Length: 112
Length: 112
Image: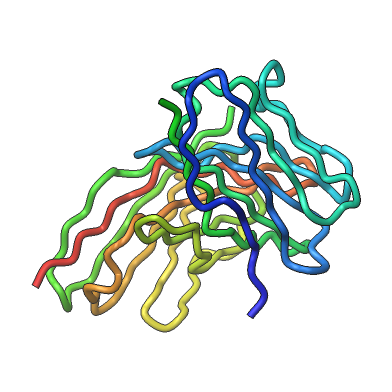
């Protein structure tokens, strides 16, 4: 069964360092999402791509976060510099067009 | 604005029915979803309902939608210990790009 792949599963870093997360969506899914889930809360959309274009990044802290999906397939989310408040699970999801989002296992970030 | 609210915790006895409730604010949402998240994992779609329906049944799951009150519920019949997880309600945000707004999640604990 096709899955959304994410790496790394866990990342521990010190504040002010740079971190990057990678996501490979299900083949053929044009829409890719990065969500952030703080412990005890629901996922919050950071950025949404349609193919290689950003269609929603209204909640992305653009001073330190960046995301790209250069060829419209896999995607990278970067944080530089990381802050203590960035500790969270970063979830990638993809969808075709029906509204069903398929989520990866997530990348858990701990900033010390 | 868009907002999805859920009660935070529900405890039930194994074999009983569980009912998880959710309220949403955007009456123009096309679809409403229920996702399940097990510890340390991503979100898994359980079921969804189109906004012009008032009920959907899928094996042990029953979704009820009251559009007038903007109230959504998920009933799990014959709840099992494997159903212990966090359940998220989500609404689709109108605007063409299928953005999902999630609630904070309801933690379901099933005890013998």
